[in-house]
Image (tube, rainbow, N blue to C red; front, side, top):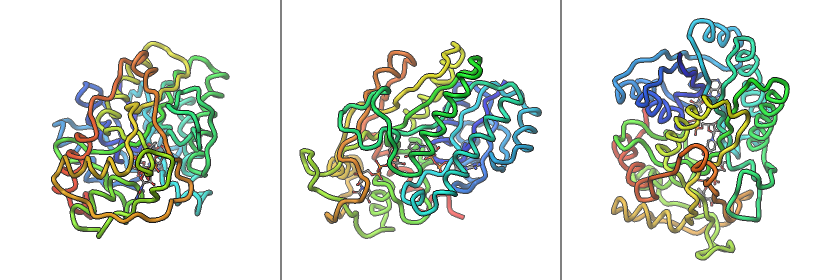
Length: 337
Ligand code: NAD
Ligand code: UFG
């Protein structure tokens, strides 16, 4: 029996593949490499010393999916494949709806045709929209504020509807907070295309000399130092959360939602300080205006995952910065061309 990992060449997918292989799972990976490189797959094999089938293809290719389900003995699916840039989703919404929503529907249809009814889906804290009350619990009000977030909410709803129609499905919706860091070996990590949108990849590219200085988007928020607060979570902790979720699927849980966060918020200024503490590198920065759409504060209540999955984040922001720097300094150009 194997686990099909969609989007397994990507940032979170590659780290999860390592942890799944280390936990003894057989995996099959499908990825169209639209936002990732084959080199990541090669390094997952190198790190674990294990081989697995990699299929370069799109989840919107039904015939290919059916072939994979027929050829391999797939027990469950971990579904990462999707586009994830919030700003881009505002400019090209149809690409996002088609890739993420149509792609997921085609995957679920193929699962249904082939009798595979166990899935772990990559949702996001973005489904909580501009929530006021912290920490965010799984039953906090939902409401996405951009097309990317709406694709996540739609896919969550589609999966809930599938379960209502056939309760032999088992569905785990994981809402990730802010994944950062890298495998401690520095062999795999996040390799954004072009100039990073997100804080920590931006910081590490300033540190390695590829970018001049960080723009801090606003210091007039209602927070202790005026900069936004997020729940940064080490990508290895997130990967471990998927191993726990797959174990949970064996208990026939029906549809369940879990926040994967640390429960601790850190401000932009605290992350700059943590990076200096972990690496000795001071990041030059300039305070600029607010970035439209940023929530002042977002952090999880992760207690449901601890209680029901036996999962808790173990790594702190110093670990996140250190491991990010190991990856960035050893791979200044990411996976290269
Ligand atoms: P990523 O872009 O590194 O990985 C996604 C992978 O999916 C890429 O390798 C890409 O090539 C592949 N892919 C995209 N569309 C595909 C398609 N139609 N068919 C086949 N492969 C396809 O992103 P990531 O950070 O690893 O995120 C993984 C998942 O987690 C995504 O669904 C994302 O929305 C979600 N998520 C990410 C974050 C974050 O901050 N990184 C936060 C919350 C949720
Ligand atoms: N920030 C800066 N300068 C930068 C980049 C970011 O000051 O160059 C600030 C932002 O204003 C924000 C914080 O750093 O206050 C974190 O920003 P990120 O872009 O790293 O993360 P977000 O919380 O905005 O977004 C992330 C993912 C989204 C996801 C969202 C909620 O990128 O995909 O978390 O889960 F939807």
